[in-house]
Every structure is written in C-alpha cells, then in structure tokens.
Image 1 (tube, rainbow, N blue to C red):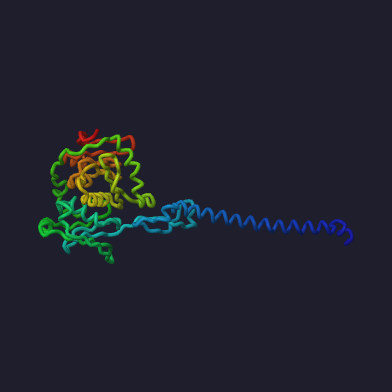
Image 2: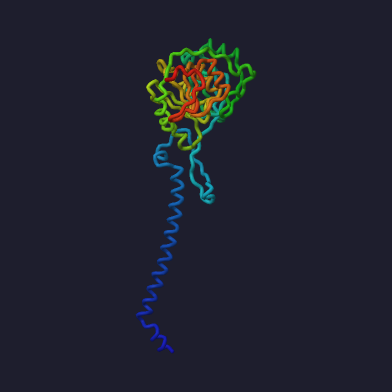
Length: 320
C-alpha cells in the first residue's frame, strides 16, 4: 500500500503540493492586508472630506474640531469643524447693556458698529477706548463712551438679552421697533452689471463658512465693484455690525454699498440706514417691514442678489 501511495504521489508532486499551500496561505494574508488598507483609505477619505488640505493647514479663528458620525459610516467617527458661538457682553462705562451670541473675532468692530447702528454714538470718535476681556462665562467688550453719549444712553437705557439672530430681543415697547430714521440723501449710485463679481468673491471672504456652513457674511462693495471688508459671524446682525464698525474708520466710508449673505429683515435695513448706508444688497429675500423701513428712510434695497439676477424693492433711481 505504501508503494502504491508513493507511486501516486511522487516526491516532486509532494513538493509541488507544499509550495501551492504556502502560496495559498500567503495569498490569504495578502487579501487580509489589502482589505485592511482599503478600510484605512476609506476612513482617511472621509476625514479628508471634512478637512480640506489647505484649510486643515491654515485654520481660521472661530472654529473648533469635534468628532461626528455620518449616515454612511455610523461606526466610524471623523473630525468635523464647528463654528464657535460665545456669549458677548457689551459694557458701556462699566454698565452691561446687551448680551448677544456671536463669533469671537473682530469684537472691536462689533463694539463700534453696534453703537453706531443703535444710535448710541454719532461717530467712532465718541468711543474713547475698547477692551476685550475673557471672563468665565464668555467675553466682555468694555467700551468707554464720552460723558455726553453715556448720559444720553443712561436716559434711554434698556436691558437687552439677545439670542442668535434675534434683533428684537429685549425691546421693552413695541413703539421702539421701527424707530424713526433720518431720510438718507441720494449721493450714491451703482452699476448693476458690476454686481456679479463681488457675489462670486463673497465665499472667498468666508473661510469659517466654507469649513462649517454655519456663518453669515457682510461685505462692502466699492463703486467700481470691488468687494472689501468681509466679516463673518454666526449672527447676521452681528456680521453687519462688524462691517459697519470697520468701515466707520475709513474716509468717505459710506461710498459704495453693503452686501449681506442673508435675508433682508427690518433690523438689517434699519441698522444700515442708521449708519448712512444708501444701498443694501441681500442674497435672499426681503420682508415686508424691511421694505417699509427702506422706503421711509430712502434706502435702496435689493434682494435675491445673485449672478445675473436682482430684485429691487425700493428707490431704484440709484441703480443703473
């Protein structure tokens, strides 16, 4: 029997069979290796989608990284960027006036812009100093007003505790909504054919928005169509205040138009009009009260501002 077995499986065949088994085992190991590598590459790809190479190397302020899970991979967490949201208190001469939820950057511009758009000051020169102080609950922006402006503020002071996107929070009387705004002069004009370029540039000025999808932006369009001074924030009102505050330090700063990435609510129109802005472009629609305020204040309001499209709600004579 042994002789028959040996004749059926000669030494050369036995060696060949052993080599085949070794190759088969090696192939199994390779398949497991490449399967693991494919999984690792898939996880890396998911992370890359959330962390674009350029943005991962140069992270703007106002974002934090947190783990998240997606519908396609609930068993694998990936890093995602979130926009920061912090309580910011504006304190005038030692007295807290308003608390709002905002992005933590450009708060010195917020202090000036809010003070202008709320009629607390007439010009940036009415503010003698601004200090940004981190406190355990959030951030305090300590503003030193001139004596005359501080006395006027105390006479009409109201406590306003705002929430994200809330422009009416804390208003004590309905009569304060839509407070009279001095009618604007007709000194500005704008060529609508120049609008497409700044609209395309808007997202370039919005790094936090590109990373998180969570911010508004307000930018300034010069008469030649150049977009400058773009400011982001989680709140559309705050973004506009930051823009107005930054622009107020420039000579002839009201020359041109404001562009906002949100809808045009009455608060946005009123803030712009209070600061002497004659033309306001909004990417989205306008509300009925916003149009009423724009008509009364002589402000040119344009909604649905998108490449090749614009809807003019009031005072079209400034546009060409």
